[in-house]
Image (cartoon, rainbow, N blue to C red; front, top):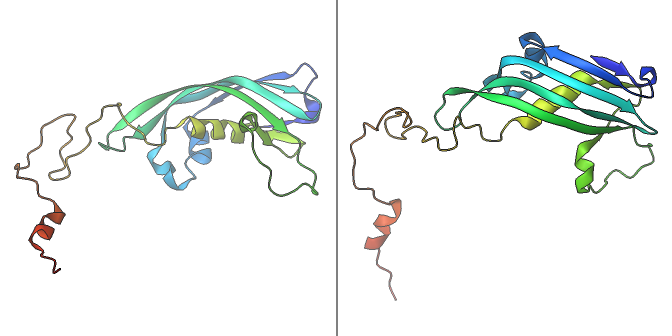
Length: 179
């Protein structure tokens, strides 16, 4: 969905956004790591777009659920999304602006757009990606898989024979250095 800035009333416009798996697959699943992400419940967004002098403020709420794969035990789980969106879109920088600009903490909630249209799909997809954990875990204390037998340690005990663990550096104990 694209919204033209010149068509926004001064008081702003509220956009209701409800998308299902087709939108999610087209927008989200195009990335390299996106094969492990699936939509568990439709994405719902209520977003208010308010034009100001040289910017557009976006405020709203994003809800839905995605299915992720736990990075420790490889089981699928559902992550509920309930994110606040508070973003400022700025008109493009003049072409004669220096290439590198230092960011301040308050700049993290701003980004640039072409000055004519706002791609709401892109903004919502970006907010979903920002809500995803760097290391998806089904539960904070997930035990993962046994490195020996592959058992899911959250559901069963390890079937490996317990042996005295030795270090690869134990062989160095037999090395004699000449003085």
